Figure (cartoon, rainbow, N blue to C red):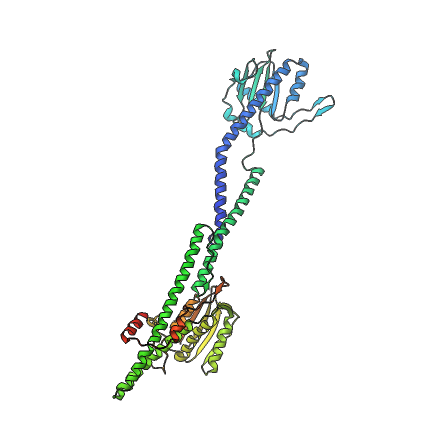
Length: 510
């Protein structure tokens, strides 16, 4: 139940709606229940006064021999009538007699051509039990405006509910006694009230579900779109409809997506421009270095220029590949990694792949293949061999690359992802690249919503690409990381640029 409360907006709406319904019903019950009881009591009092007055007129106009039959015929399950010829008893004794008569079943009464059967004994136990609170009340003389007859009448309450008694003096001096009491009324939770409350709760719950769906669907669509955007995809702009709050949220997300794309495009375009502009001064320096008479100085200068040129070419290659659009599609991730390992093994590298289950994954396969290739080539170069596997976790998918090398110091685990950083400081092309491999790999993986972790083992290094285990996503369209024009900058004809300006721009970018 708690998990449903945490995860479902509809469940919260239903709970709050039902809580409001119960509280409102309770408030209405406490306000109206007492008023309801008083209304029933007043109606019962008016009924018994009217009946008793009518019966008194009938008895006075009827021969005494028929009065007993008339009284028996007038008795009902809630009222008893009898005549006291010896005068009126005191209130306590009269009340006890009244409860005894009310508790007796009605007798069988016969009329010509008709028989009225005896009724079952009514249940007045609750009324009789509560009569103690009314036992202290005495006879009350009814006022003339409350009593329709001119002769005197006395009234008392039998209990705190509907029980009441009335005594009227007839013309012959006898007293007509009337006892009235209804069985205790049902409580609030009757079958009808329970059915009404259940139908109200059901209708309100259905309304709450539709209201929650109207809010949850745009939020769910926003969450899926945000996840896709974080993985480097460009999603179709969210529909900017609905209430103001939801519409403004969709508008803000669409503006954020456009701004992020412009930012990434501008940075990639700047990187491509800097890499391109460095070609001209490097070519000029190489030509001038050829005319240096000192052989040692010339070789050192040419070596430095070659290193800078290698870094520049790597930067240009990186910008070109980033500027290339690649569709996001679902592939077999295990097959993708296995084919990479087979290709490297055919080139003579010591690479092995541990076969596992088929894992379908939505990604940009060429980019992800490049990231895996960089890790595997690093493992072969610095750790002699690479053991690769793909494993599915509870909430992620991991591509694991292990080697038998010396590992990486803990202080350098973050530095190795810095562009152009190398553990081997000689910058020798024979012992390593230019230092962009891990940086590119992490950039690609993070664009897919994952990350790369480096863990030192007892023997070797354990590099793990962790990708989020997400199924599906919003409609996406392929997009280049850079705007149109980045390739034009990369392939544009060379133009002269001051060396100082180029170096300043390069330092800010890197």
